[in-house]
Structure formats: structure tokens, C-alpha cells
Image (cartoon, rainbow, N blue to C red; front, side, top):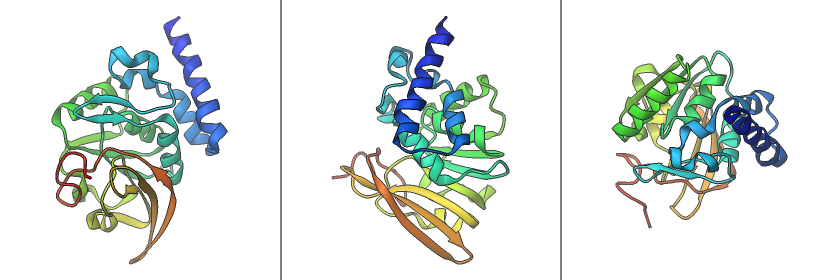
Length: 220
């Protein structure tokens, strides 16, 4: 009964919050329909998991609004054979969506407790094509570069150079850039040694903290 209940909420989320706003990629819509979002939020917030809003997950971090997850994932154009780097594991929800789409996902999380909890959660759901590392996401993860796609789930003051360098030829980087009040979602494509950037729309994320990001907390 409970599974049917959340399944209906998930179906309504995909139909009314995501597809209705223009997300068309069938693989993204199917992934959003499959992943049980209510298992990626604190138990006390499970009833709100499919609301059209971000939710707190601890350590001052949030699970992104469902539409934002779908929109960024569609922009990333994830192929079945792709290796994807995620900056900011959080609760693991975006990573689960990526695992549904890509061959391999590497995710970097600043907070050890969030990384541990996300790893346990994702393993319990059967995602075996994922590795989570604790580290400074602004530096990427050069050990397994290059990546066909890189997605950043926190707002950066500027685009960290290591992320550009770790893109494969033809790779895509999706990253929010700007101050805390409002960022611009950037899509950057690599072609050889050149990068083409486009601004896709406004968004609001928690700060990307690190050596090449914000130094701490929420910037002014």
C-alpha cells in the first residue's frame, strides 16, 4: 500500500512538475519515475519528498527540487556508456538518477557523514555503478578523468578550471555560477581545447565550498 502511495506521488511529480515544464528526454523522465525520492530525505520529511521544492538533508545542505534535478540531468545529455562526475553527493538522489542513465558515476562529497549515508542508501537500492569519495569538489576527481559529463549541485563563484580540464573531448559540464541569492545555470561543452558556454536559466543553490569555490558558509 505504501509503495503504491509513493508511486502515485512520483508519477504526479513527473507529469506535473517535470514534463509539464518542458523536460522531454524520455530516459530522464523514466529515471525520475523509477527512483524512490522519499528514501533520500529524512524520514520526517518523507511525505514532502515529491513536493515542488528543495528539502533539507542536514549539514546545511538540501536535496534539489525535482524539476531542477531533471532539468540539469537533461542538459547533461547522459549516454549509456558515459562516465559522469557529480560534485556534491548530498543525500545521493541526483547520483541515483545518474546511475540509472550512465555506465559509471563518480561522486564527490565534502561532508563525510553525508557521503557515508548516501553510500549506504545507494548500495541498499542496488546501485553498483557508483563510487563516492570525500573531498574538495572544486578540484574534481582527476584520478578517473576524463569524464563525459560533470554536474555540480552547488553554486560556484566561477567555473573551477580543474573541472574544465577533466572533461573529455565532447564532454558537458552543467554548473550554477553566481552569488548566493541567484545563480545562472551554465552548460559548457568541450571541443578539443575549446569550450563553448551557454546560459540556460536562473537557479538558487547552496554554496560550493572549496579551494576554488566559496571559502565557507553562504556568501554575501
